[in-house]
Length: 474
Image (cartoon, rainbow, N blue to C red; front, side, top):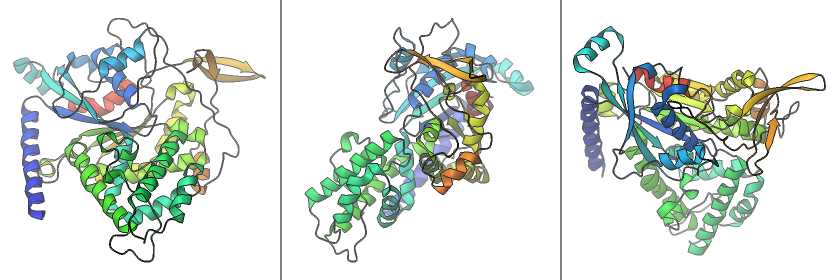
C-alpha cells in the first residue's frame, strides 16, 4: 500500500507538472475555489462574479477589465463533476420576482474563458505578434462543511470525541445528544441499532447547530450525505472514552468508522479537488455571528484559524508542483452582506474581519501566501438613506424584507471602531454584548433593470476580482 501510494503520488506530481507547463505555454488555467460557512452566500457570489466578468460595466476596480476582449462560458473540464447551474441561479436573482437561489449541496464547477490582450511593453510586443491569449477560469464551488472536515485528518477518534464533547456540552442544541452519549457505555459490545441511534442524534444536533449559526459543524457529510446516507462511514458519533475498549466494542467500531470517513470521504476530496486549487475565496457571515453573540463570534474565529492549515499556503513553484502538488498562493477572506450596513461602517466591518482572522492570516503569510480581508456584497439588495431620530442622524439601509415583501429601513447598530471591543468579550466567553446590541434583517433581492454591458449591482466585487485574478491575466 505504501509503495502504491508513493507511485500514485509521483504519477500525480508528474501529471500536474506537465499540465502546468502546458497551461503556461498555451492556455493558462486558474482554478478558483469558492467556499464558506453556512449562509455566507457562495452561490450568489459565484453567480454575480461570473455575470460581472461577462458584462464588466460595473467592474471599474478590476484592473484587467480593459484588456479583456471577450468572455464566454465553456463546458467544465472535469467530466465527473456537475456543472454549476449559473443560468438558473442568475434567473432567480434577476427575474421579475427575484429570489435567493438554493444553497450549495455538493461540489460543482464552471469554466469561464477570457480572451485577454497582454499587458506591459513585452506583453504588448508579444501580443502584437501572437494576438490575445485565452485564459480559463475554473470556479470550483464546494460546501464549507467539507472544508471543515480537512481539519479531521490530523485527529484521532479519541481526540475528536474529547474536543467535540467539551465544545458542545453547553449548547442547548446538543442537550438530547449529550444525554444519550453520556448514558452510553462504549466499552460494551457493538449494538448496531444503538450506533445508528447515536449517529442520528448527533446529526440532528449538527443540523440544529448550523441553523443556529454555529461554525464548527463537522463531520460535514453528516449534513450533506448524498449517496452515502445510511452507510457505516456516516454512522458514528463522539463518545466518552471508557476504561476498557475490547475488540468488538462500540468504541472500537466508532473508531474504525471515523478512520474510514477520513480515508474514504475526506482524503479523496483533498486529493482530487482541493489540492488542485490555485486561489481560494472563503466567505464568512461575520454580521450574522456578531448578531448571534460573543460565543458565536469566538466559534467563528477558532474555526477559521483551525481550518486554514488545510490550505498548505505558499508560492506555486515548479519543484513544489512536481513533488508536493499545487499550493494556494492567494486567499481572500470576505465578510459578506456588507449591504446590510451603511457604507460608512464598511471599514469597521473589514477591520473586525481582519482581527477575527489574525491568527489564520498570520499562518498563511508566514508560509508565503498572500491573504486579504474584505467586506463585500456580491449582490446589492439595499439602498442607503439618512434619517433624523431624536435629534440624532442615523445612516440606514432600506430593502425588501424576505418573507413579507414589505419595504423596511434598518440600523444594524454601530460597530465599534476598535475590533477588540467585540473580540475581547468573545474570547472571554461572555454570554452577550454588554454595551451594544446588533440586529440584522433578511432582505430579498431587489428587482433589477440592467443596462447592456452591466452585471448585477454589488459592493467591492470588482476589488475581489482584481486581487484574485489581475496578476494572472498577464
